[in-house]
Amino acid sequence: MMADYIKILDTTLRDGEEAPGFGLTTPQKVEMAHQLARLGVDAIEAGFPAVSSDNFEAVQRIAREVQGPVITGLARAVAADIDQCWEAIQDAERPRIHTFLPTADMHLEGLPREQAKARAVAMVARARSYTSDVEFSPMDATRSDWQYVAEVFESVIDVGATTVNIPDTLGFAQPEEMAAMVSYLREHVANIDRATISVHCHNDLGVAVANSLAAISTGARQVECCINGIGERAGNAALEEVVMALTVRRDHHHVEHGVQLEQLVPTSSLLQQFTGILVQPNKAVVGVNAFGNDTGLGMPQDVLKGALRARLEQLGLLLSQDELNHAFTGFKRLSDYKSEVTDADLVQIANNGRRAADGVFDAIGHVYR
Ligand code: MN
Image 1 (cartoon, helix red, strand yellow):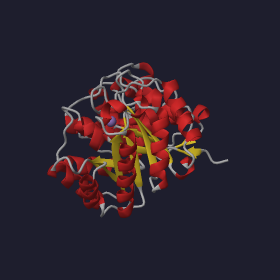
Image 2 (cartoon, rainbow, N blue to C red):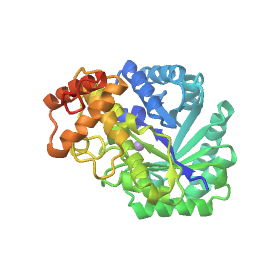
Image 3 (spheres, rainbow, N blue to C red):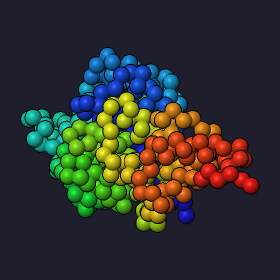
């Protein structure tokens, strides 16, 4: 039996970029979106077109220039936002409108539940008149009345929502609760088979990745996440951590994904370069310690090789694939007996890699005799 497929929606350019200190220029966003396409994400949330003309322009350029992933824009559940979102994304190969509405009573500000639901339905229908790919999010879903969320989901799926997302907007939920909420919705939304269940987890309590994985275990099939886990406050679930957990522990999760592992570190590096904000050295998967240390924990070679290539490129060392393969052999040898590989070591490793590719030396610099 084919394992189920988990769609990865990257929201680095929307939820991530909205966080203070992580702002990107339009050209940077476009370059980042191209890199996300190389990474193999299923969907790119490119921005929130109604927020500003800059945001609109970035979403429109990404929609026009970036091929491969679904390109989605965020829109409040109001007609003007949805119309503007469509205008921004309509030229995409695969355009999606993602619309959201509060469902927690405290956010409804007196709007009766029935009216809030009616608005969600009307706005999903409006989005659906533009594109067959529509996502709906009830903001703060985990702190809402689950029964009401189920009613709203059933109603929006009835009018054509193809993805229903569970945002843990304030990073409040615990893994068992996320898993239970997905199960609850699968049991209580009669037409749930017509939509993909998505989760959007924030990291305020440090469990965004754990919550995402728990949701997968009970049937979520899209995860929304950000490169390096950036995002509002403590950030969103880190894409690279979700993907590596699904990969290294495939025996446990039994699902597939479409992410190209060797692009994880280059993508992380590009974002760090653009924002000027570096991940901590001990950050899982993409931190320099995770990259420099022993490979024994099952980190796939593709990830390490991508990391080596990215670091060498930062040092201005551009290697061919053959040279890189030799350099990688040298790198592994060196890291066996040296716990910290320095930039000077990397320059030597690159030079040895080049010579080895020419057949003069082997990868660790011994002259062939
Ligand atoms: Mn968010």
